[in-house]
Amino acid sequence: MLSKTTTFFPTAAAIKAGEASTQYNDAIDWTEDVAKGCSYNPAISQLLLSMAAIHTSVDMLTQVLLDIPAQSDLVRALREEIIIVTRDS
Image 1 (tube, one colour):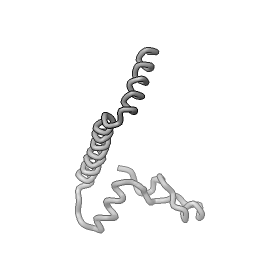
Image 2 (spheres, helix red, strand yellow):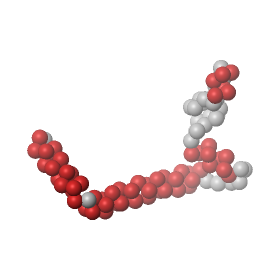
Image 3 (cartoon, rainbow, N blue to C red):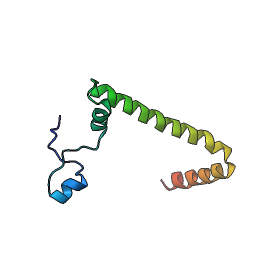
């Protein structure tokens, strides 16, 4: 694990003072701030955030794939592009 002295995203105050920042801007630090001293498992927190990110990405892709057939002009344009790209390959 990285020590708190490692600088990733310096704060504006630290930059002005010429100091290294000890503040992180990541999910683990956010989880520690939100926990406010309560115990939690950082690995489980990361897994839950990853699961949520994967779920939303898959949901968006599913919606795109379901919306494409409803747009006949889009289907035509995509079909033409696929033919051009595969012909040149």
